[in-house]
Length: 322
Image (cartoon, rainbow, N blue to C red; front, side):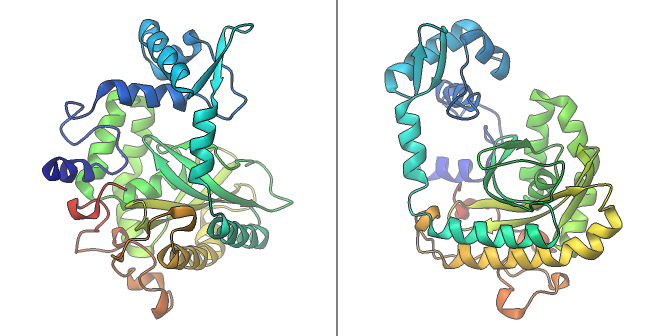
């Protein structure tokens, strides 16, 4: 069991381990693929729609939705002949967000930065080929980006995703890219073209920019942070109207407050006693690269994926999976 746990820990947020899917119970993986299709409590999907979204045969989807309905994860709507998220799934998500003090504090910091710049600022966690908004802040005059809590964005074509991929250990990042190339080759091409540049830039400066990758009208900047609770990277990111903030302005005016914000959030995560992130773990991420120019007391607040030559501790075996 210990050996298997070590192998799983190296994959981080990948859906399969480094050698493929042989170690994964396939039906569990597929069941989660089905649940991921439901974006929000109000989503209503039939088996055909689910099959199209997750790329599974309709017969397989039918068996999975039947089982998930019996478990309470889904509810069948006879009139519509469709499914929606069930009470067990809602209860599970509610229990995961118990103790909102930390998240409220994070949301306030996100909102302060959003008003300052202005833009939409997000705090995100990875989920296979996507990142999910845990919290966000938005300026009243922000235009063009209206993501909210629970929204998902692709790793391959977003500043947040590029920062996350760049922060991973090289072998784990390459494994993520290889799996994307098998399943979503068009999106993987976008990530591959920028990955090596982003790795170097992240080591040097502590953040990543992506201009027009999510939308031609939106430019983004993102900072990856190590979460000792989840044993993976989370990301602080901002989207701004490209007509107002070109790449030069991102580096000059957006990067400093975003690095300051990420340092503050990293400190919250490090000092959290459970709260929204549950079990506090004793180990600490390595110090941030000196080039980030953060205060000495904040030096441990960005993960070592932003520095070299020592490899980051992001997904080494002893760090656990999340």
